[in-house]
Length: 226
Image (cartoon, rainbow, N blue to C red; front, side, top):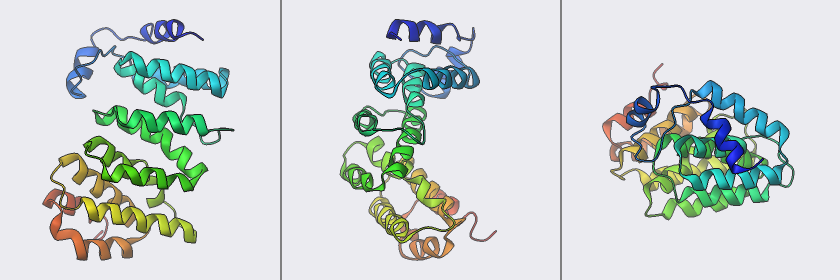
């Protein structure tokens, strides 16, 4: 499939009058087409089923380079799959996109694809650790969003617990970061972890809770008193 074919299929899904509302909601300055999520999901699912991994990587790279809002989300969705044989090029591409993040919707869709690649090969968390030191806020935030699967395990292995503690260390580093999106990401990570490992969250909040913004501290502890 060529890029032109893919863009034509995307544009065929435009819902008249939808683009302006999406542009305002997502605070976009790039082109927004106005495509409903269900239609986008159906289209990219079909692409995943018919294109080989190398073809999907190539198309995803080209879609990303258009800088169209839905094209970038479609690029991420092309690579969102649990099992991908020989997935190193997928992981390399995802890492390369992180520096371009500038909005939560695009970033979160890419991180969802990245989560699958981390679960497939948890040693890649060491690559993510480099993001923690970035001056780019969206890269720092991505380190927490992409590791969210480690908040959800009911029976974590020893290595999973090590990754939990590693990411909690990143949260501690971020605790006094004034960026709203960073504080929100910390709260998101702690809140989800509290459903499965409340002891670790309580310990974290006892030590670092005072450094968090009040809204983040409140959200992080949402389920601890439930």
